[in-house]
Structures are given as C-alpha cells and as structure tokens.
Length: 197
Image 1 (spheres, one colour):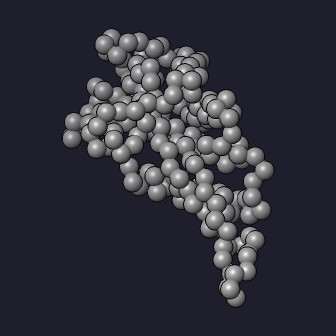
Image 2: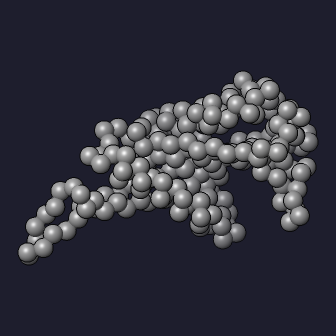
Image 3: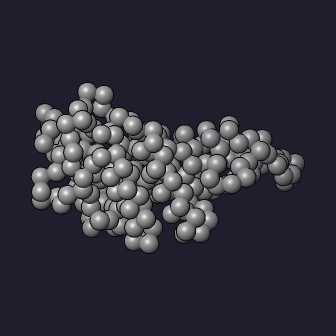
C-alpha cells in the first residue's frame, strides 16, 4: 500500500511541477487514470460479477483492523452506478455475491495530502534570504479492482485480473468532484477494451 501511495503522489508531483510549470487553470487538468491487467487471464470465459453497494475508504483504521469507513453515499452512488453501467455495456451481468459470480469488483478510495514546494515561482524576500512558495492539495484516488475468487495463488489470495486508478485533486463542489470521478470510471473502461465481451 505504501508503494502505491508513493507512486500516486510521485506521479501527481511530476504532473503538477512539470506538465504545468505555470500552474493549472482547471482542476480537471490534474485528473489521471491508470489501468492494468493480467494478460494471461481469460476474460472471455467470465460473464458475471458482484460488487458491494458501498465504496470503502482505505485509512489507518481499516489497515489497523478497525471498523471500515465508507465514501459518502451522495458521492459513491453515481460512481457505483457508472461502474455498473460500463460493466453492462461491456457485456457483463451483475449478480449477488452469494450467486457464485465469476469475478468480484472491489471499489475503494484513498485520500492523501500533497505538499508542493515551488522553487521556480514567486520568491519572497525575508531577512536577506529567499523562501519557496508552498501549496497543499488534497488528492483522491478511486481504485477499482477485479479479482477472481475461484482462482487463488499459492498464498490463497484471489487472482487480480484487472484494475484501474482514477486520481485527481479533491477541489471544487461535491457535484463537480463526483462528475470528475464518474468520468474517470468511464475512462478506465474505455482504455480497458480487453474486458469487453
């Protein structure tokens, strides 16, 4: 998990400092979607999936074995609906978890604070020395992972067949953030045509 968080933060630092040297005009410019899959997995042989009705938040409580927290239903609802819509359009059928689905989809969320030191922007003068400007951003990552509960590795863990991460800044209204993440879900599917029937 630490490696994933480090990768996410490093990638956003790069985007914020390299791709937008003069700053970005819109928060949408920082949104990014990364997908990956197991090239040896036979998606064509799978037809059904199950998915929870909530998006779990990956936080210290969850990692420490405490009670899970969930994304606000106002935000989670449209995101889960978009996942189901895209799965349906790709030929998959949603079933209940107790109906022996071919795969399970696990949506989860991670939030971090990114601190950016801008050594190339405005410099202020203070007692004969200069200091960099500092900006902080709240970053949200929506992760959707497809696992096969009937195909386990030597450690007894289910095989990960596919997944994507929609990453971006948590700036703007709730409606705006929700819209950007539903667009991120759609993009995750668009760049994953190999799961289409």
